[in-house]
Every structure is written in structure tokens, then in C-alpha cells.
Image 1 (cartoon, rainbow, N blue to C red):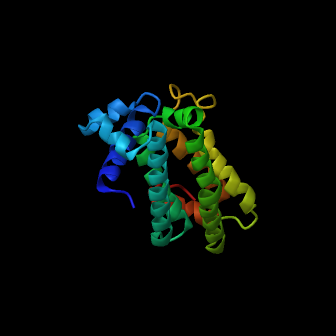
Image 2: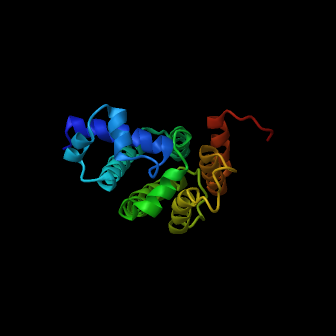
Image 3: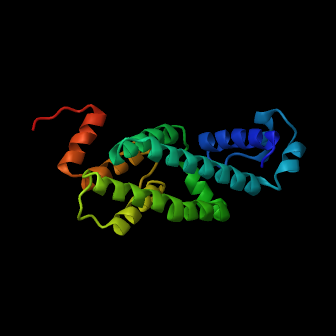
Length: 206
């Protein structure tokens, strides 16, 4: 259980990392943002890497809880995806595209934590959604669930690669929503496609 002070520090550090990336933010910056001494920061975190690690752990736990809530509260598999896309758009709009590059290059242990979360938690959530969609007649019965679940989570990581999608040429939020939308349209039945249009409030000729 984290103390109130640690929760406050993590919240502020996360805000700075999201806005400016990880590499450009120092412990001095975090202390200044919080209007506290750097000495106080070091009473709660060994160093910047420890702070980044705890911020990532806190963030992933929050995402997992949110994703589970969306899965439970959604009316069907496509509604679940639409809610996730809405959340992702909001999250990526506020996120500096360098954040994941910084994490991968300068904080390998934190990057491993993210990859482990992706491989275990995200993979399971995608597979469960695919099974649900097939049962509901919204996704094609012939899809290969293990292959497509892995494809989807690798799409997420691919979207973070600045060599494939340079940040100066691609809007981060638009990129991830486009990849997600393309994936969804590739697996839906006619019934599912109509439901997508309904949720998007799109009218098209039969």
C-alpha cells in the first residue's frame, strides 16, 4: 500500500512523463513541479529509474482495472472495443510519443514490465474479446484467435516504433485508433459491421 505522499508524487511524475517524455524529465523537475525538496523525493524513491518503474506499475494496474470494467459493463464485444478505442484516443492524445522510446532505450527493466503486461494481460483480454465476438455472431467464426490476438498486441508496440511511424509525420492518437479500427473491420461479420456503424453513427447504403 502506497502512502498518500507516494501517490501524489507518482501522479505528478506520470503527468510530466506523459507530457514531455521520460528522458527530458529529471528528479529536480519532479521536485519543482510538486513544490517539494529533492531530498523528500529520495525518501520515497531510490532514483529516477525506481520512480519510472513505480509509475509504470501503477499505470498498468490502473489500465488493467479499467479494461476489466469496460469488458464487464459493455453490451457486446464491439461495444467493448469502441469503449477501449475511446479511452485509447484520450490517453494517446495526452501522451508524448517519445515516452515508450525513452522507456525502451533508457529503462529496460520498465520496458520488460510493459512487455510482460502486454504478453500476459493484454493477450488474454484480446482473446476473451475475440471469443465473445464469435459467440455473439459479430466476429467471423473462421478467425485464428491465437494469431489475431498476437497480431493485435504487436500492432500496439509497432505504433510506438518511431522508425516505422515517425512522430513528425504521424499523429500518435490517430495512428493507434486507425490500427485498431482496421483490425476490427477485418474480423467482423456483416452483423458486426452494421453494429460498428451504429456505434459510430454512420449511415451507409445497403
